Length: 284
Image (cartoon, rainbow, N blue to C red):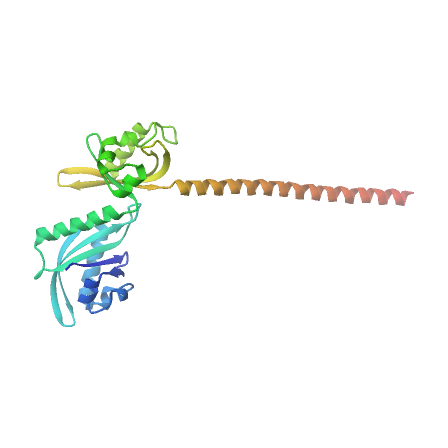
């Protein structure tokens, strides 16, 4: 039975499944908030923390053979550690999956389980995730969130429509979508990733604003791009509403300021007029 856990950027446990908790003689609900130093010896815990730091720094999955002791019993396990990323690509923690090497599968089977974990994250993500491959940079896959976002019934339908059909002719800055898309792809290939805002179009023709994170992926001799798309239409509407209210407030402040200035001027005129009348009264 596989044991799964998640740690944050500081190697503090976020959660662990029942199998992982049972292996450490604790309840699964008690894992959150703990550190390796509370579960293992200082030497073992420090090694695990260093492994976490290395994997998060490199941003790549690693398979590690590890040894640890719990209540005097030594375990030798194969562990797959996967960096967890936010929507903007920033790494925020580690997902770990391990099995007892004496009881579980060989290296090839373990890699298959790791691929299953990636597939699970891909299929359950609330953000649209799709892949594009050269030379035309056409879509080759799209997760369920992608189909929902663009209004496609099946992955086959989405892949068939092509990138040129999910963008309007021009972007909000006036540039042709076809020209700007090429520039965004080239930047992602050069820098490894590229985060930007984009106007997309659903299959039914309606448009929406989104953020797009293009990430360069190299698998052997094959290079492709993973695109993570988040609909920010509501965010844009909220920003527009806030800006509209700010302009109203600024206008109101201007009116109030102008009114106050007029009141000051009027009071000054009254004082001057009163002084003039008093002077005339004294002269008379």
